[in-house]
Length: 312
Image (cartoon, rainbow, N blue to C red; front, top):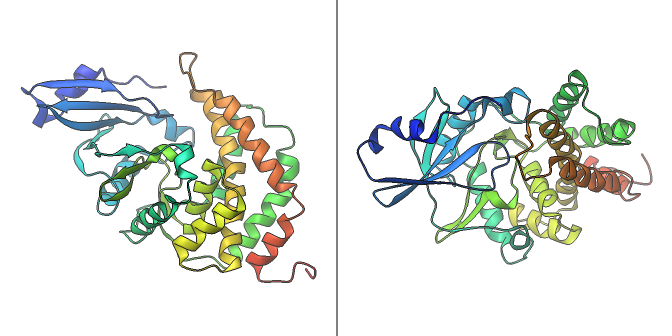
């Protein structure tokens, strides 16, 4: 990873903080970047320092694009942006008063309507300046693994034809693209007094909104009933094709993010990092493999494609 300026140097680069009482602490939970809480005259802010090596490895969008998308997302459900330090690169954003959701909370049926509302608000906002496609990201990360001789999980390439079937089914009747977060693990949801807010736009881009929901389902390990509830709350519709679309994207999320953790383990993670990227890659691939090998996958493909599953 590239050298990051010292926190003392970073604090001096924010003009509005110079000469004021400043306290700071490193925030835990970020898997790629360097995140700090900074209290200035007892007013809390978040200093998000972006690691260029992350986007260089295909693990995030370019820092300047992430910052631009963060600014746009602030118009809907994102934190307000107070300062941009493009040469670092870093951004000073609002410290949202609220509670970071846990994986268990995201699985509670009573929170799902608030999550769906937050997604709809983001998706109705201004378009981002870049696009995101989970299958294109898979191809990109496969190329990174090949160039750096990173080992793939057992059976990964052998299931490529099934992944291609997912891609083809989902491409047949695409939903209108919307500005999406694309990485909504529980820790990126903040429950506040005025609803759920969304932080961390490292992988953001315009995308099929059904992927957003499928990715939430993958990260929180939703069962089909919870997927159906999330889809119904978001779309205000219980249509089987929409529900199946979200479930297919749940599979695609696990398939591709398996490689994200594989690359992070091989190229980015240092010995001092507590998070086990290799174990996370193995867990995601286990979930993906189970879904890809499930005999019921054909029914989901048929529902999304609008055909009878017994008559291809």
